[in-house]
Figure 1 (cartoon, rainbow, N blue to C red):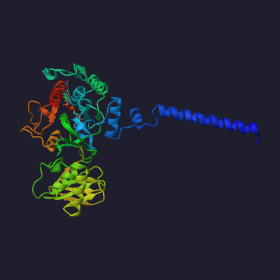
Figure 2 (cartoon, rainbow, N blue to C red):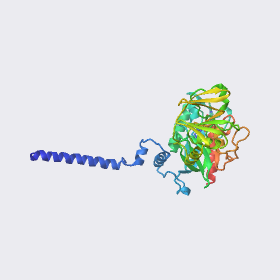
Figure 3 (tube, helix red, strand yellow):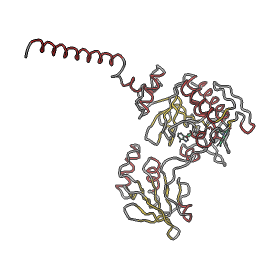
Length: 390
Ligand SMILES: Cc1cc2nc3c(=O)[nH]c(=O)nc-3n(C[C@H](O)[C@H](O)[C@H](O)COP(=O)(O)OP(=O)(O)OC[C@H]3O[C@@H](n4cnc5c(N)ncnc54)[C@H](O)[C@@H]3O)c2cc1C
């Protein structure tokens, strides 16, 4: 090969190398190899940890804050707010403004499920709803608007205050732990801990129901909680999350119980439930029907006949579906919150329930619901009380 060609080839290679080096240095300088940068620039948040990191970076502060709990691996917040409606968003904003660390857990993919699902497009939203005047003393200024205006207001509050919202997190239970903090579990098997919890889940929640028709004759025996079970009944529990497994473990000690789950593995349950479940299955105390779906239910001599996708059938006195969602009352009961004779949570003057550190704001505390302004006002009142005790 002659010398000029070799020289040209060398120069071209050198040029390509130089361009590569410049691009690499540019990438390094602009955070292309930095996970935190990627998160804030459009990566999907598939865990609360990613979300926290993104929000913390956005606020230029450290995620998962409380110095009291530095050694614990579980995320810890001063306040966990359950439900991103008017009450939950207001509580989160007020807490953030007071410098308290807060996470807002919402079961839906967007905030304000009640306004989105139950308000007609363009619906007028009155501040003094049904004539009730509520004084607002906090940071949120709410006046007459319409559905779209109200949603835009809550959008901008979340954005302006960089609220740490974890969507698609259906909270299943709140329990006090031995170390004094609250353990908050969500359906995706996430657990976080908090000093305080504010429940603002409204009144519109419903348990999920099966897609097939339930014959009217057996409607009363097909339930979504365990409150109607009678002694000696043969039970079918349907579901594969913590709720279904906990029902099955508890009930198999006293009833002939079968657990049905469409999968063979219980990937969404916590370790304690996993161990207990293995024990009761191994001992034969709990029967299982795993890896098969129920295709239909039929009434047979006043009982429930379940037809499974493997062609088999079995007869039960009662079926409990624990396949996600819950009514607000069931949720409160699961959190061991005392209720009055109207199934309303009993609260003190600070809106604290019978469970120390757990508060209630908004519709969930009223027999026939309250209003947007009432939810905002109660949220402010609770956060001011908590801030006064920190
Ligand atoms: C048709 C209709 C019209 C109305 N018109 C007006 C009006 O003009 N003016 C007015 O002031 N009020 C009005 N209201 C009442 C007002 O909407 C409520 O008072 C207000 O939404 C209550 O707010 P909240 O935060 O308590 O609960 P909600 O708004 O019900 O929000 C609860 C949130 O919690 C979430 N959630 C539920 N369970 C869980 C869980 N386990 N884990 C995590 N998240 C959960 C839900 O998805 C939801 O986003 C109206 C209500 C209805 C139904």
